[in-house]
Amino acid sequence: MTLPERHQLLTDFIIEKHKGQLRKYTNTPYHEHPIRVANLAVKYHESNHLFIFEIGLCHDLFEDTDCTYEELYKFLVKKLKYDCIESNIICNAVERLTNQYTQEKYPELTRKTRKELELEKSANMPSYCQNIKYADIIDNISSIVKYDKKFAKTYIQEKIELLNVMRNGCIHLFIKCCAAINAAQEELKLSE
Image 1 (tube, helix red, strand yellow):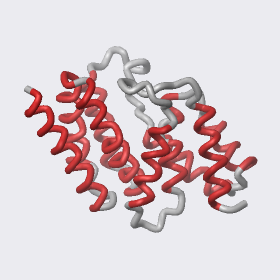
Image 2 (cartoon, one colour):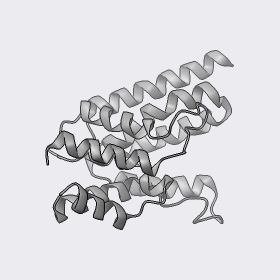
Image 3 (cartoon, helix red, strand yellow):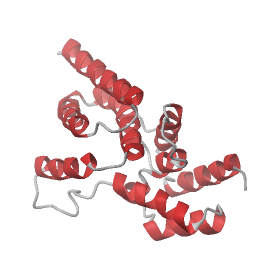
Image 4 (cartoon, one colour):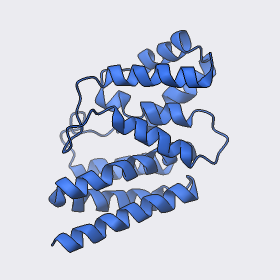
């Protein structure tokens, strides 16, 4: 199976898993977000990690759909013919990118505490996972600033704190992420 064929089948899989989900604020199909994140991460891909597109494409599956590690693993092995090691690499990365400290799982913790715990986890992510986080921030920030200025202040501060501990990814993508945050801060100042 060729790489483009695998990528198309995986794209079809995530479209199906995110079926019916819409992006907050814009009401566009949710699956467009992971596709943009994957493409942006690939564009700035510098490491020798082979699965950056796959990880970017799947980065929200465990958090925002009913997809489990086991389901994604089986799909990768049986349908896409990745071997067991490759499939585990992809699934492990998606698991690392999934917020563990959610309000649903930890209702007793404040948002601030949950985000601090996520920071600890993110600081130890491999560089290729940090690249996906950078691309995710870039893709999310403009719509949050445009449509929810009140929350945008909190979001921007959380992402600044995240970038302070996530410095192992591609420097060019990191700079692009910092620039997006800076532009968002400027836009918020102009709107006050």
